[in-house]
Length: 210
Image (cartoon, rainbow, N blue to C red; front, side):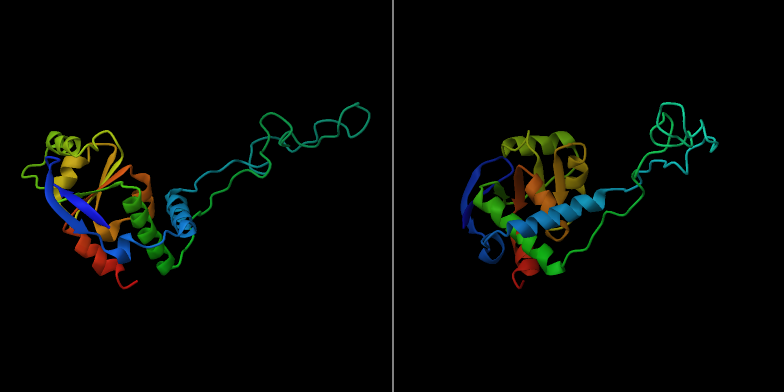
């Protein structure tokens, strides 16, 4: 698949680049992507939820009324779930939601996500993004030139660029990542993915042999 290369002004440079078929041309595995996203979201959960059960709430354990003859249901403790202030039945307890996935499955999921982006024309190829001084306004203007300003955008740089990160961190819909730090969730959650041309070689190094 060929993609046109743009500059930071949003102008077509006239060059086209062939995307690596081994990375951007695989048959998407939807189940692998589902599992990888599910794991990512599960790992974000703190799992600190807690509700008090009847043995944990404060209150007397004295039998509140006689067993028979009242015309109502029998009752023992005020801490029973049927009473206001009583304990909760089978309430949530602290737990760990994380689970493990096979490393190769996660790689298949990421390649599937990259191929989906290319197929859906959500991938924008840029020759380079150079920012001399960290400034949000400058970075926002670049995104506007690339026509991705108001959308959830993922920027893929070859390596960590401090100026790009500092310039983008105040933009709530923008995330910057390197090819090795990408997650399937990041790729699928973005409306547009702006990839630097030099990052393609890194993708090949990471995924070509998989």
